Amino acid sequence: MLAVRAVCRHLNTVSSGNPVWRQLFQRCLGVAVPRPFFLPKALKITSARDLEGALRKWRGGWEPVRPVQCSRRPVCWAKIHTREVLHNTSVITPGGRWIISGYTDGSVWYLDLGDDTTAPLELTPHLLIPSSFSDDFVAEHEIQIRLAPDFLSDESLGPSSTSHTLLQFNIAVVTGDPLQTHVGVWSVHVDTESGATSTLKLGGKVSSFVDVGDAYPQSACLYGRFLGYCLSLNDTTCVVIIDWAEADGKGHDDGILRWYVPLEAAKSMYLLPGDRLFTADDYDNASLYNWRTDCPSSTLPPSQQELDPVDPYWHRRLDRTLYFDGIVTPTILHGSVQVIIPSDEEVISVKIPLDPSASEDYTHILSIIKKPEYEIARQLRAFGHRQGVGLSADHVLTLIRYCSEDGVGGELLPTRVQSFECPDLTEMKNPPDCLLYDEFSQRVMLMDAELSYTLTVDT
Image (cartoon, rainbow, N blue to C red; front, side):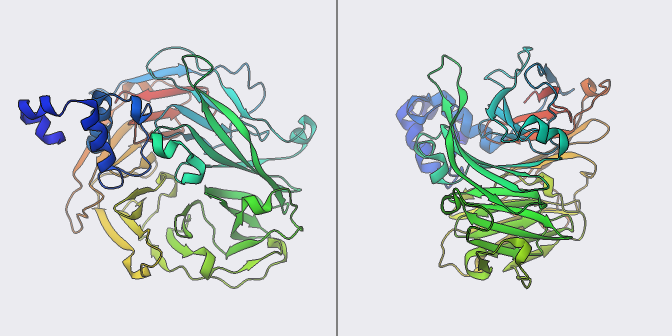
């Protein structure tokens, strides 16, 4: 219909009503667009124009102007005081409205980007989750923090799944110090009653437990009732998966049931429907596990375990560098979970069937970009379902558009590769150190290591 409306005036007129577009959107869910899909407003109050715009954004991506324009907004530090943001903890919510970050004292703050990211107004950080550590403890110990939001499961999203806009979600905060690993799972709500501007509001802690100390979390992920985190412990690593509802209120030696993936050094990981676990490490390995059936379980803590390695049911070692930091939240389409895995020699799409009775042989691999004629090493990058974006050290923005349903293979080029110079960045003393990309709104955000500003790429 998107194509027909562009060439046929009569069909453009008869298909412009709100009921038509709402029905079309419902039919597209899980087929042409992923489920869940996040609109700027609830479906029942979204106009036909906004629905068409959202679908076109998803299908068509964006076309930067030349030269690329970036809107800079400073971040007010008055509320943060001496806290520092921890590297690679920032996430952008679906729809591109909020950026959530973890800080060195174990607290979690967010920035409200608003509807107009080009407004030159100063951004004020808002406290989302307070630190559980005292100031004296923070001054004496190094604290690591990992954030794991769940933007995929119905249990986490609640009414968001039927309204098709972000109304609530769960987020896990995993903090490690020399004494203990603290885990808290919180419910976060979008508060629309505080005024014209929506804000994030803490709904309450739904789970809290303690695991072993001296085991710093490397990564974490949350899906439904299960939390996974990768621990570095005694010169070895393992992934631990826990039912956070069952573990609520327990200590590390109180009989918490854990599933283990021994020797897995996951730098990026996602728990997926059907008890699957996807991992990517910095040794260029991507793996899939059936964690509930294939991985050992025990109530003993990791420090008391001697477990044999577990073979993944699917494994791919990339020939060259795997960019685990460029993997974004998987999408659900055509009855499968899809993960896009970038490397500097190839970008592949992995499709995992949702049907639990489907054979492991049905995991489908597509090479969507083969031997690309561009350089994404030494870049900030993010690869979504249909589009990837990267920023090089010499301030060149690369936009890679592809069709992840159809592999190109061989020597063929992706659908489109474009490079754009960003002259606004050349004079900056503290250049961008983080790139966040939201495929629903097509927002591309750049930030420095201290999160002292945000840059919105004009899309």
